[in-house]
Length: 332
Image (cartoon, rainbow, N blue to C red; front, side):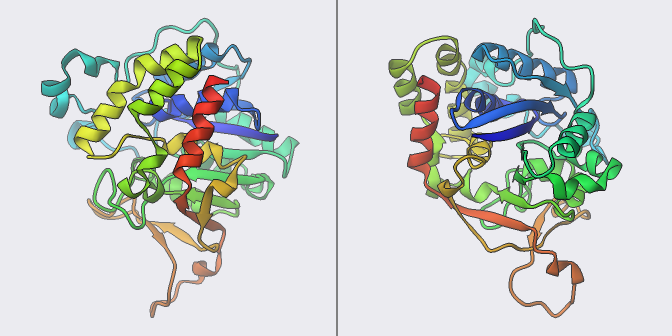
């Protein structure tokens, strides 16, 4: 069993990742740290995490993290990239209310210390023993590295959901949301000495890997194969997520990006990877800001950092095996 700290921004597939991690026989969730990202506020992120943990009946501590990105965007100008209401209300009507709905007040409270302090303390106390999995913007990790750079080499492995290299981005044609939301933080983390596995959109949100997405067939398997609060919750909540991603992105189902990233912590052979490479983040431009750039091949302009090969990139996934693992874990 692998000891994991899971850092999330508490939207759709983050919820599924928490459920999967709490119920998996191969993952020991030591704690959940939250960051403001697609959820809209740290309060919402914390409440969703606490309510999701409560569904499982497990005792997993939740820590409140960073409210602001290192260089936050003005959403009054850019708009909220995860708000589908304007484009899809005409088709889905009131069903759209189930998408990223406001969390109810949880029965329990988050821990007294913040996410950044918890991350630093955990890796200092148990160097080389804990895997870090991030499924939202990596702001918490970047701030922790700024406060204590020594933790980089004390993280056993970091599985980071983010970036795009071959497929189209989901924010601009070359950017993926988690990196785009806080590119300064992503640059700090990717340029650090952390041993990183990067899980890009290429293997998560591309119809070549549709068998790694959640479909209504999977919901039926969960409904008829299991029972209890977690099963009821997934079957009730996630049909609209499947429909949104099929309508807006024309994908074969709802992408399981966050669950895939967490699953790799215990089952890394679900994916095939590149050799280790240096990955950087573009900080300029309206379209390219937040683009992940991997230093493959030969270039005339020299960059000494390309020798810092600390990141392997997932390039394919056994989607059917992954989805079978997810369904079997949920139904127990």
